[in-house]
Length: 236
View 1 (tube, rainbow, N blue to C red):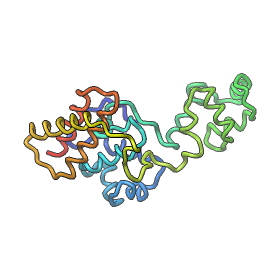
View 2 (view 1 turned 135 degrees about the horizontal axis):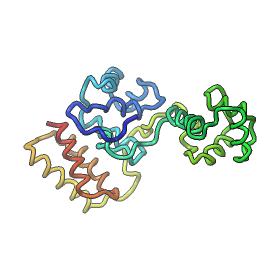
View 3 (view 1 turned 90 degrees about the horizontal axis):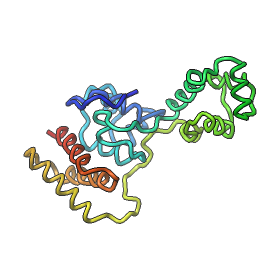
């Protein structure tokens, strides 16, 4: 997993792993189709054999339903790690049970089940931890609550899903803040002018929309300026 401390680089070192992390359990062709690229292009990005453009990065940010999926995180791993896929979350839950709580014997499993008031056999719990058996959703939810793990991450409903769910980005019917939009436009225009960059109008519109999305979040102006700087570096 990314530790979030890798600094940005022109070749986006670590981007491929973060992209695979977002893809989760979804097949490469299906994930590529959602992002509007050929599966071979996506495979090259995951292997870090090519540099994705701003359209690709902005589409991931827009289509994700997680505020932690930001330009900064995608490019260089900065910021909180977005929630893991179903498979990764399941591995983390099993590791917490086995390693952190040391549930590695029938006796320890029985003790945990007794104090947690979970009505399954210790053999079944050990088989679940080993990945050899499943447990029903109600028992799973109780188990997660007992070990302070987010149940929704390992619910069967998430199985096979990626982090990118929305086919198209939209504002959800919310009214656009004209003041913030104007400020976002100014920030983009200032950054492009400072780097003597001229980009197509559609790409500029995408960049402004991306900055506006950040502007409506409780983030400082400095954070947005830094995000723009990183994007501009990709465009150079």
